[in-house]
Length: 132
Image (cartoon, rainbow, N blue to C red; front, top):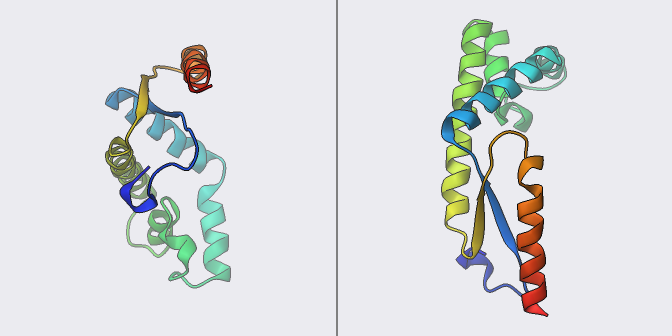
């Protein structure tokens, strides 16, 4: 746990999942495209009709960039690129923060997370058994 939280009150098992940067980037691109295909632009348009563009919702990744597109600040392709870029930077900040966590067992994951579930389960079971 971070210094600001103090020591753990109970025995904990911390695991982290780590992907190769290129694979993470590709998954982010796929996720952004899936959100757009599922109607994120239309959802953003509807939100803009109901709320001020200064509302907290428009500070979130995706909404901010699409709201700017809908205001005519850039085209949809540019909005998509910005969503991808901002999401990549956000993921990098998350990893920087998570790496500061103490006592985390990191697992390299490639492909579906299910591929690492058995290894992670074994690790957690070992930790629980050794704490008993």
